[in-house]
Length: 357
Image 1 (tube, rainbow, N blue to C red):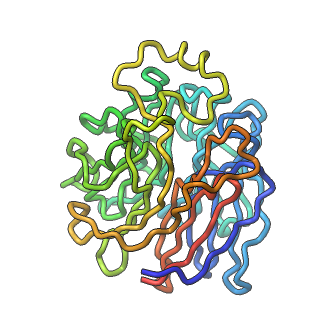
Image 2: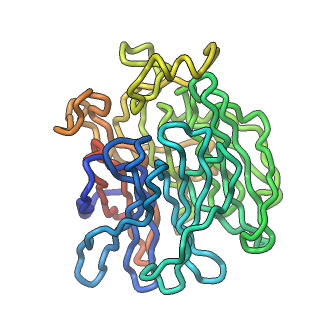
């Protein structure tokens, strides 16, 4: 693979993170992310921008959420079987992920007009990162995890919400032995899924033999993981492509039990209780790499290094928490056969790259 073009998506925010891409029927793209002063602050909202395919430019973003009491994060874009577009995201009380609920807006006109916001999943502590998929039987599968500050989020575990009525009601299926495995990314074939790993060692993988209604226990792949989000997609030629930070914990001085966005470390650690085998934070989020697999993720081939400057620092990063941070990727293959990747660039903005396979 090779990079054909790089673009910067415009933003009014000093901090931007967790992008998600979707192609529209006319070849335009939508990109959603969260932005504001800092992750976990009440001014964090969901933003969305449209790439005008005909003019080859990203248009100015639109603010899609505005709950002054909550930090709104992790947007996911989904084409519902009805043809509607869905924008899903989480909404929590400031930095307390244990209060998060999943919210939803819908569009029937390719993202120009959106419905009012409703709570899709109201159980406190429910988090998402990836969009639902539709299994061969037509059921919606939405991967979630229940976020828990105990062990500094090291006790999180994954589930799949299953809906047989288009999303009006949901049943939960637990992923066995998934402690620490979150951000479950179910591929559209519903045969394999990949996880971010809280303990910052490897990307984990599990499989399903029944269209995603039950899953094997997650097992480590050969790909390192730094407790940062990953995303994978199946390409038209049958290969799986995954974008991730190719680095794991190794006892570096910056590694910590405290997430980088937490301002009051002592208060956070007091709320966590005794930390045993908790999450590992502070592992650098670089390099950002794209790899492919021809055997459903059992073995991988490195294709491309997207970013690798470990020393670059944003002028907005006063605490030095996000030096060399290129993270939270989204990857899709568009109808023209090209691969589109977006990711957080030092949290300054969302970067968009177009790749030739």
